[in-house]
Image (cartoon, rainbow, N blue to C red):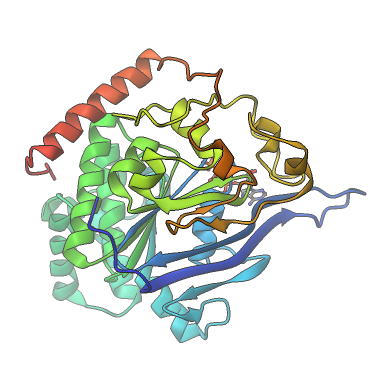
Length: 367
Ligand SMILES: Nc1ncnc2c1ncn2[C@@H]1O[C@H](COP(=O)(O)OP(=O)(O)OP(=O)(O)O)[C@@H](O)[C@H]1O
């Protein structure tokens, strides 16, 4: 994790963002999926900002809204203080260069008919950054930067492993000298041992090029290591937003508590209440009234189904959307404890611990 970013240097901001899919069908009661439903957040320049939550909570949709890869139903996105929803074409080009995204499945996101040199060189050509041999040199430099060789430029995506393909995707994202990169589950499709290498690479690149990272992920181990701050999403809304260490040491929202308990992380704090997340996530097409988490919350009371809690600021500067966060601190769920990790998860945790030990012993990352 990098040093905490300086406050009040906001690079990217979402303001009451909503994205509702559907609703225009021929059915008498068309279904509207409220994928993102009133999200506000501000990403500080130079930080790694994580967006976490269960599958379907709207993380990826939020990431795409922040880059204007999809149009918002309502709300605004500001990049360096300027709304990106009303940009002129020239400014959109600058936005496309400075804000980049890397995807979960690098194979699906790389054109199989283009060689690596063209994949990585395309943004250089599109943005008129270099031509001819200068462009080839730049591609070679980018491939070296991400731990590949210049000779790889002549090969095609199918000739590479998953980790190498993700490196190609990262090289392409770097080609336009971006200021901010969104990683949409950037390592979740990779083998565990490769995940650590890609995380190391992203952290190294962040420091080297002064990047801001927004990481969309469901894996709390990844988030804990990488991010400075975390927004926890549930059914299209932010439940808690906090500095990473504070969130892991003392989760305020019952949903965050449940997430941390359900996915064990190395050295969990003894203060962390154990809450088992029960039942499936409700459909974002018909989210529960009031607090969206109330149907699965062990602390729910009648008001929780009636009134939506605001994302309230705590005295420590954290934010939490729960009517009763003060009362439940330290109380735990009382009766429920998390199940032991599955063998697969235990193995994953062991690998993660080994990796962390290597990090802590300041062994140079293998790029
Ligand atoms: N183009 C679309 N049309 C209709 N519904 C969509 C569309 N894209 C996403 N959704 C729905 O919006 C909700 C949020 O999806 P999203 O992919 O943002 O969630 P997520 O948290 O990133 O989940 P995952 O980790 O599984 O990708 C889901 O119910 C999803 O089915």
